[in-house]
Length: 188
Image 1 (tube, rainbow, N blue to C red):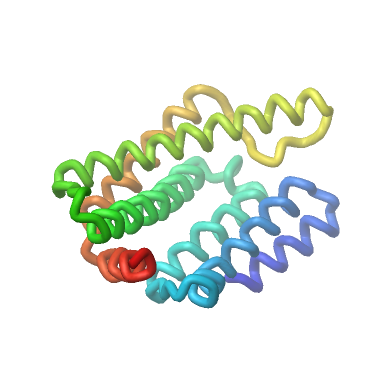
Image 2: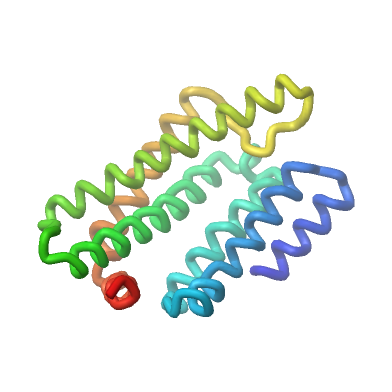
């Protein structure tokens, strides 16, 4: 997938498509994040989580080639997957804090609600960034790096962000327990 993102970067450079180039560069950088976390923090992401992170940025980079406009469900898929990653990070960090301090206790119901609200908050932040990128690009007369298609698109993005958070709350917390324990050990 990393090689495919590099090819997308090359295509963006060859066609002078700034949006494709910037998104591919960011995607490539994210694919190195698990290795950096392991080297600098001693955190080992599971192979499955590493593949999911890489898949999310790969799908986004591919989407910049036109799939977001041409395939009606593509944006929903990428938002669900990205939101699941955000929820996973939120869960692992919060659970590590819960393990780290006796003064902090997060009951399971609260943690599930927190995951949903954390993911939605970052989803709203992303939508605001898309909006600001569009306004900024319009004022500069250049192509927007992030695209917002309107209010309906924003609402649907947040709906699928919710789906990603719910999937992690229902099925991912058990798988993320090891990462939370490693974060806890790192805090200790």
